[in-house]
Length: 287
Image (cartoon, rainbow, N blue to C red; front, side, top):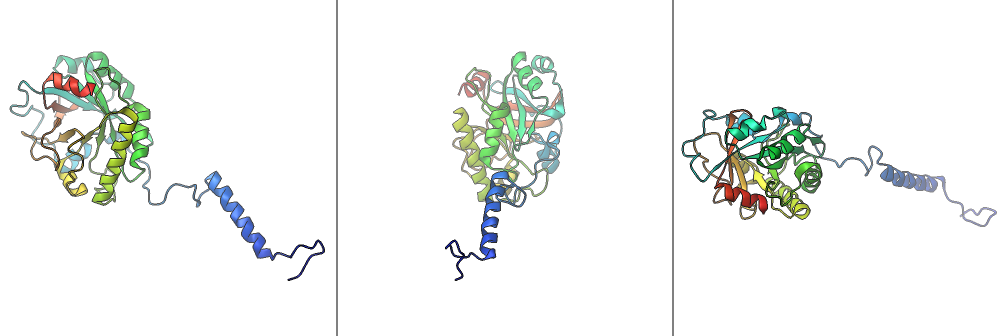
């Protein structure tokens, strides 16, 4: 090997190029340049483009129909159930006093979607329902193909999805329904979706101390999770079915906690029944 006058061995030019390439790779990683490990994870879908059009039941109505109409199902208004609503940005500023005077006593408000969207009407809807006297909670519209369950749970908690033992705040809810942007099951296997939800629920509980509610339809659940029974013993069920009865439940649940029985009700459209008396609703809020 040729030796320079300094006494150090000569290094071929390609070795220097290799070293320079390695240095560039390290700098790219730190700076997050395109095409490097610092860029977005491969295989992730883009962030939602119309989150204001996505709410609890928006895709249920589109895929499963709206049912017969807005009238309360027979027997649903008996003693032992409590009337509620759910709202999102598509409802705008909500007339909470009108809802209260009509007998509505609880509400769920959309807070977030993926890790890029917050409801611009959230303050009026979440705080307004509380001021009117309703027990209220918030929900997250899941997009499991855009980021991890943990990332979305943290985003939700950081943007309105928290919980406090004030007697007026329900545990957060995870909205799992048909993908508004493509593949029904978000391009994930049944096991992949179940694991994504486990990640979300575990993170939410670690942040708040509460087990979150899951919103889902039986038809979607069967198709996309293989009718998993992994959550029924822990997570309260909020089920949409626009008809005269709640119908078949997903595997794992022997009863529902909330039934979204219409998407065409008075004042805001989406109306729900809590499956129990008012003191049980208070108990759910108190944890």
